[in-house]
Amino acid sequence: RIHWNTVKCLTSPQVVGFANCNIFGPDQSLISTEFQFNRDLTQIRGTFIMHLPRPPSKEFHKIVDINFDVCQFCKTSSQNKFLAIAYQSMKKDSNFPCKCPISKVGFHLILINSLTSQHIFVFQGFYYIHNMDIGANVPLFIPKNSFKIVISFSQPELSILNISLSGFL
Image 1: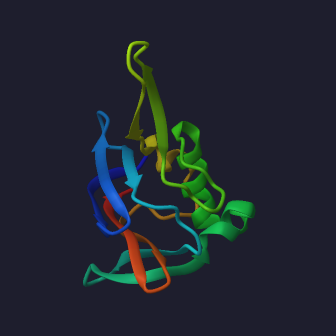
Image 2: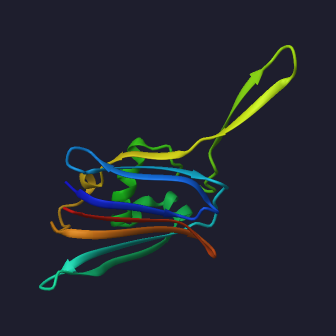
């Protein structure tokens, strides 16, 4: 199992109206996130970076650096082992679409007053990924060690979201 020490979500307020990232569970092994986008997203690039400590100094060094097109990844999610692990964990309890464009979430509640006229209230919803247990999908060849992961999403000329995680296996 993975034990998470930290999770930090940094967002661009131009694109993300609300973000919440949490670690929980009795052994700190689960992650939940919620996001609300201010606009539809297209042409999304992703980056996955993993750092492991290198003996004897225990200084962290980058061992994985993957850049990918998010829209293409949604069509072929199993082509990269590291990304497939995260994707398999993410899709179990999530309303996050793996298709492009990713639309800002919205829904309507319509109240009708028969004496006057129709009133429409629009509420913005959010995307969620709950109870993500990445450790359940980690292959045996990954060494038991501390690690750091950075996952970033961007559009041309604009950062959308950066998620930084640290933990140990």
